[in-house]
Length: 424
Image (cartoon, rainbow, N blue to C red):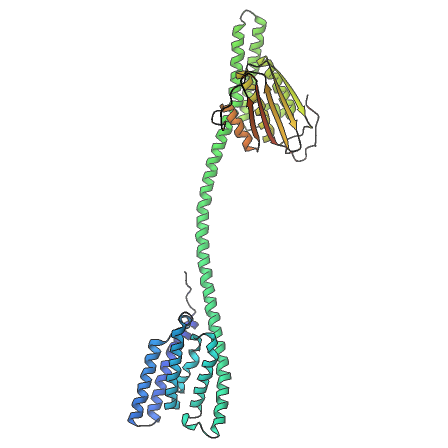
């Protein structure tokens, strides 16, 4: 975890709390040696306890933070400290300078022990303030009790306030550390998101290129390929009627018309515009015109029926339906060997349906998913419909013709009238 440097004031306070016990112990020992009893045994015993107190402070002391984690050691350390303070205060009142350490170290204890620890320390401090244990008699007892209460109130209040302020400072430092860690993780997340965003941009660009390739392939199939197929069909028919100039001219005229239409459609596809018939008419009219032109080219009668109240659809949906009608008629002309065909355009509140039927030879539908065995035209149609939320269903069997059913959502163009005139 990222840490934040402690405030200089806090470092200075920590150093004071660390070194004050030794300074108080040293000062108390010097004053006792200078002003206390001069008996060698007394001085030796006093210096021995001083040495033990210094070692105890050095080897057993715990920090405030460590006291929360190692409570047993903290309680043992503080209990031993009070015993040593008691021995030294009994030996000389000058050790009151060291007894003050009891207030400084209260914070290492669990909170429930603060009050008794402060009370004992206040009693020991009051002992030094009346001149030592030897003065605990007679009228000085009342003074002693008063001093204990004064120490308890004043020193206790200051100690509690200092401990709480220290804990608040440590909590603030911990919060700052947590914020620093959160900022670090946020930076890492942002860097990772930036990498992912760049990757998504690349993938979106690649997907867009692929979609555009598929769109162009579908448009080429729906325009140029079908147009060329019709032209070839008309030219082959013209060759078969060399002896009949009128019919030959008619097929050549159809071939020229298909060539012009295919060229126009190719240009519109490259520019990503609507199919030519849709640019000039509503969908029902465009489908009717498509069927009439296909009838002229193929010689197979195609009837168009419109049910419901037609309404304008978004461009993508109308293009999908028109291309489906175009592909369905093209397949009938190439494969069905039918004598008639029918297209039904049905408008409902939820979907718009297009059914393309023929009475041709039919075929056996592949088992399972048909997409792997369909012609490119049907696969492109299914892909285009999937992109606009539409569906494609095919029904056929040998000798019973084929039915193609296309469905797209009935989404009205904003601002369009609810209905328009029925197409013929």
